[in-house]
Image (cartoon, rainbow over all chains, first blue to last red; front, side):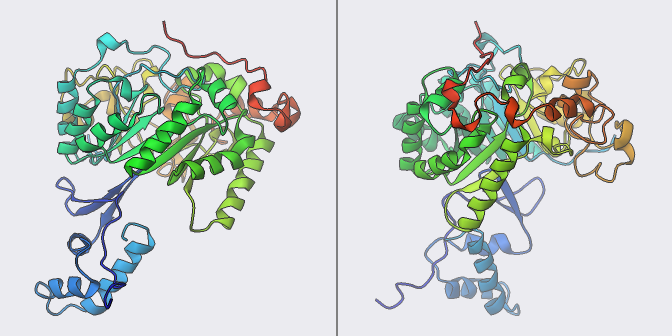
Length: 88
Length: 373
């Protein structure tokens, strides 16, 4: 089937993404660890619900950030998060 | 007074009751009786106040938290407040039904303890037959698909079993194994002579750890080594700084910057029954007592590491010197370092009865078990 092996990023089951209303910004929470996301990391990861491809995520963000180099930055960010084991 | 940063973590010791009798129990020598425990509604309020302060992580611990019949309600309160919640359990009493109830309430992860790689050693330390229960609990956690960490306290009688301990964690399906070298607080200090390892044992364990990491750079459980401060010459950066990151609330509502701080005389810890957690964190004298660097004495005040290890552990300084403001004797710069150096220097492998060829179960233990009446 075409497209079957296209990556549709989703957070690992051990990881919770939430807004930190006290400090501002977004956090990834997991056992024994809290990771503060900088910039638009939280906005990008909220789109990682297992339904969107990386291209789909970029397309969603394009509306908000028409001039940003999303095509390079978003895949690189997602790969970094996947390498940490937080994204599947 | 400067405003402290928002706390990240809450250690909720919901009960001191425990089915195990471990000689290295870090709970205080005087345990809180069940009749003095906080009610469900108190914990619900504490979690709400903690989240308002900035707490995002909680360890629900004890004793054995499963002995609280209202544990699911407590977990649910943490979940409602947006706090990532980990159950810290002996595994005794963790049935599939109980875990399902807790996961439905919003529990995020489980940390299971085991005392050694095999039943005789594990049961000897626990002071009761419990190893089989732990194996069953591991299966329950794995079946539920909940993030699973294993905690093993390491000491003279199990350090040489480290390869088997790591293999056990992998076989049980743990994603993370916390290899926690024994620390001597609370009840544990009474058993120091029976638990303190020899340097050679620690060296072997570190070599095992390094070899395991080299052989499994990606796969297998993550191994977390909690340092044996008696042998390092540098103190632990305890709690990430007193009153800087974490709040402990004990079974009766006593609030402390560190779970071992019950023992510090004169600290006058506040209680969540009397005060809001916000007052406790920002205003209470107990949380301010050793915050920052202004309280430091001896070599700490001018030490380049004073913002790295915060003078080490206040509770250890108090336990060994009677003054919580002294440099942690685990530090080689401490004027009291001889208290630790003399202990460990006299302790070599030949002094360890039996050595590695004998199992822990056959070694005369000399443990003082924790058996509250």
